[in-house]
Image 1: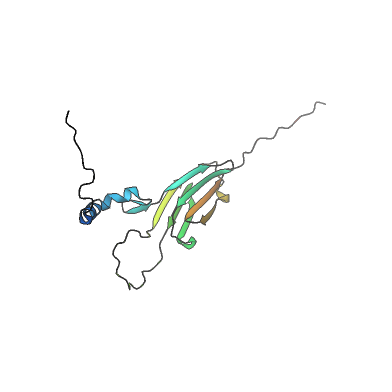
Image 2 (image 1 turned 135 degrees about the vertical axis):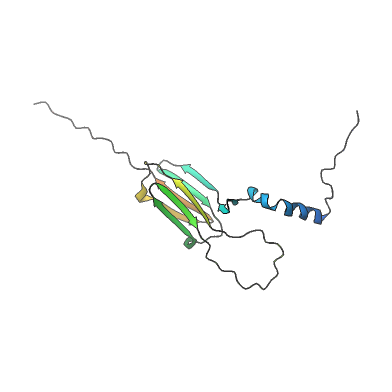
Length: 149
């Protein structure tokens, strides 16, 4: 039996080859980042948790300000969006590599009838926008005891 040795890193020292591969896969590399692009829109990751009191949506959106977000609730559709309102400052330095940017995004969620839409709240802490969606209190029919006369 012949032993075959494979070189898993051909041209490991060649920086130009690595840059060529990075540039070739650049459109696909956004799949592996926190923000991916679908149909020209930036998608931000969202975690949905159920608590005893209701549900919590955690929207991971670092780098934004509270004023950048817009949250609306209409016809059982909760829409979270952020629009970047920053203007580019005067460029005094030559940018050699630009790997991150802030883009606008919009996500919509259909909420259940069990959610109390009047008590939805939101807070933005350390790059995570948390929306608290409390459950409606169940109204149990009261039992009336009738006395026999």
